[in-house]
Image (cartoon, rainbow, N blue to C red; front, side, top):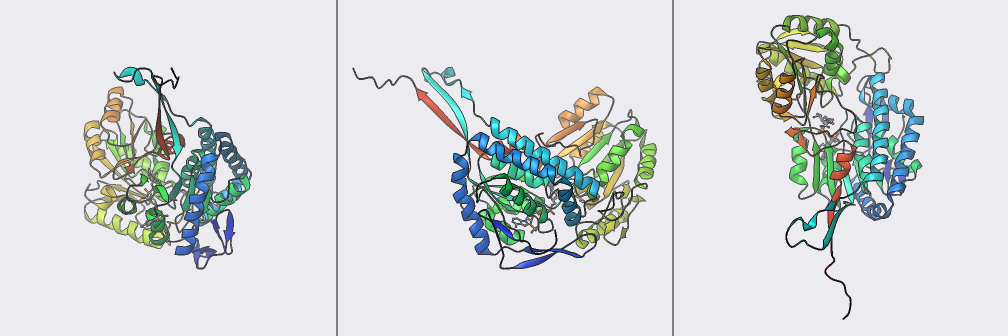
Length: 481
Ligand code: NAP
C-alpha cells in the first residue's frame, strides 16, 4: 500500500505532476504519496470519460453486468487486503473495515443485477382522448459522463454506491475521492481495469475538493454530479453545478426515540454500537436519544456501563472498537462542542476527553437543544440522552432539526410506531431499530439539509439515466392508395 501512487486516466496509470503525503490518522506516519491532480490531468480524465461515455452507451446490459460480476469476484478474493487498506487510511477498526468490504461486494452484486433489469414502462396512451390508436413506452438512457465525489468515512462502499450504478446504467465516471482516503478508490480502479471495463469508463483523480472537485462539478461535459459529503460542500456544489443532474447525500444529527415499554437489555448493545461505530463518523450515527421518563435512569445507567466496556486503540488491533478521529482538527472540534454543551448545563456521564487523537466515547445528559452537539452534525463519538414525557414530545424534538436522514423508534405500542412513521420528517424511519440501519439495496437519502435524491443501487441507477418517451402513431400506414 505504501509508495508513490498514480492517477488512473483513460485506462492507464499515470505519474502525476504534483504529490502530497498521506498520513495515517492513528499513527500520523506517512503511508503513501498521493497525486494531487493538476488542471491538465483532471481535464484529461474528463475528456477520457466524455469519449468513453459513447462506448459505454453502446454496450449491452449483459456486458456491463459481466464487468460488475467480475469486480465482485475480484474483490471477494482480495477482501482482507481491501479491509486493511480502509483500516489504515481511515483509522477504521478492522472488524468494521471488513464489514465495509462485505457490503461493497453486495453493492457491486446489486449493481450487476440492476444492469440486467434497467427498463422503462408501457404508457396507457389512449387513456386520454386524442391518444387513440397509438402505443407508447419509455426507455432509460445513460446520461453520459458522471462526476462522483465521495467522503472519507466509507471509502470503498460509498464509491461503489456511485461507480456501480453508473456503470450498470451505461455511464462513464470521473471519481474524486476524499483527500484522506484515496487508496480505496485507486484499489477499486485496479479491480475495474482487471474486470474488463473499457478505457476511460472509470477515471480516478485524487487531489483537493476545492480544485479537482470544483473542476469536475463545473465542466459542461460532466452531465451529472453525485456527491456524498457535508451539507456545506453540498450547497456549494449545488451553486456551482448549474443545470446538471445532481444527487446530494449529506449529513445529519440522527435521533432515536425509546418508549416506556421496551426491554432495555434487548436493545442496549445496538444503541451503543450505533452511537460509536467508526468513532461516530457515520452519516446515520446515533447522536440524539430521547427516552421516556419512566425508564430514563435505567436506560442511562446501562448505556454508560456498556459504553465503558468499549476498547479504544489501534485500528489494526482485532480488539479495537474505537480508534482515532479522521483529523486533529476534528478532535479539537469535538472537545470544544462537548465543552459548550457542559457550559449550557449538560452533564458528562462518560468520556468527554481525548487520548491523543482518540476522542473517548462520550455520553451527555440533559443537553440544551440549541447547543452544537444537538443541532449540528457531531460526526464524533458523542451521543446525548434526553428525557421526554411522551412519544409526541420526542417526535417534536427529533423534528426540531435542520437535518432529516433517518430516525428510529423502539416501542411495543403499535399506535406509537405508526404515529412516528407518519410524523418523523426524515428519508427513512426504522421501527424497532436505531437510525443507523442500512443495507445497500434500500432507498437511502434525506430531506431538509440532509440532501436530495436517493441512493441504494436501483434508485441511484435511476437517477443516472434519462427517461425517453417513444410514441407510435398507428393511424399512419404509409400505404399508397
Ligand atoms: P466533505 O468535507 O464534504 O468532503 C466530501 C468530498 O467533497 C471530498 O472528496 C472533498 O474533497 C470534496 N470537496 C470538498 N470541497 C469541495 C468543493 N468545493 N467542490 C467539490 N468537491 C469538494 O465530507 P467528509 O468530511 O469527507 O465526509 C463527512 C460528511 O459526509 C458528513 O457530513 C457525513 O454525514 C456525510 N456523509 C453522508 C452520507 C449519506 O449517504 N448521506 C454518507 C456518508 C457521509 P477533500 O477531501 O479533498 O476536501
